[in-house]
Length: 117
Length: 110
Image (cartoon, rainbow over the protein chains, first blue to last red):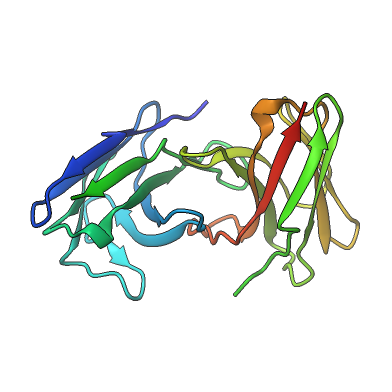
């Protein structure tokens, strides 16, 4: 089946530094990927849509200069949390669509835990 | 804008069938019903989806009412590893932004 992989699965960084999270589609090409954030005991919230070869589109209230998204190839999207603060600590999850079945199923990565200290 | 309504939680016994309801009374004719689950500290896992016919795969069955206003996800033989939050989502085929509600927290007990 389709596989979406994220790296790193867990990362701890110091306040004020930047951290990059990668999202890869392992056995298919993904022109569009999505980034979500999930705080403890809450549901997933869509942050942005990552488009290969063009700028990402951000949901209302998400700072594009703080959460930099790059989708330089058909199999890789990266999310960089810049000048991280403790309130950015969260579970970050990416997803990608697969065209090969009816309904265009969306598959998710394993998620990346970010802790800012 | 919640498009689906699910019970917040349910318990089921290991080995028994788990029936998870979802109401989507405002579903449009071109919207699919998708089910995902999220096991603690993991990304959501795709389970099954359907448009109007009932569907079955190796994980579960999806029963959609004739008027499409509700559906039931059936886990035929629940195991402890099925303990998770289950999300019912409706979306059109070319809308890839999934909107997650609170889902149903399913606890399978031995």
